[in-house]
Image (tube, rainbow, N blue to C red; front, side, top):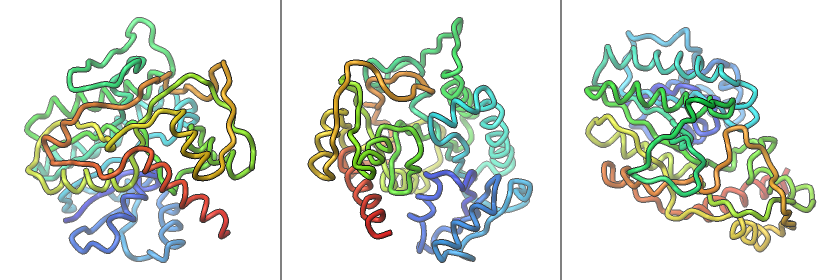
Length: 313
């Protein structure tokens, strides 16, 4: 199966490439706006020559691909804030590139990495199959641009029901390849552990569902193996985790020291999300997706690899 990877410099894309490594059934071509960064990454892993690498100018409808997986997007809240409304242009440009190919090759699968943010709203409760996207159309704020760009892409895809397009909504993603300079709860925790500092955070409870490389790999494999459909699915683990439970788990496992504060802390570049996860199990119904790990297990296992690599360096 020939697969074009769009946005090969993204964290999730890199992790998927590593998961695919050694499987002869997949032949990958890695497309990126900075192909030299991809080549350097492959070289550091001794993977040089294992995959084709190209910039997007080289992408052609004359090539044969059985699937396109589009990871183009932003990787952290600071990036989302910095990009602002240009997120619309970037998302649209590469989505149209993929759609142009699928129009001409309607048997080619197209998997688009969307986001739970596409639901909009404040996430006062987890979303489900009946949830409606809510956008403050008369009071749009800069933190809405990311969510609206994903929702807009999904609307385009649903308007083409005859084409095999699946949008995967990822709510929270974490792996050992995470950029520890990014401003996420987990990366903030790990920096505090590494620096032997006290982690200070709001006492307010939040709940997250952190999928990792195994969940993304499993779901994408099952989509590629299933008959072509046009739909959106939410990616999830066996169980989400609330912040206080996770803090205690990190304290027990890695010696985290933390202090709870009455006021809110952290970045809100894509909006406040108290229960940012989904109860929508359409991925199980359509593709047989059954995650093997809980959210806490994903975070602890990936964090352990990060901290062990640090101690070995």
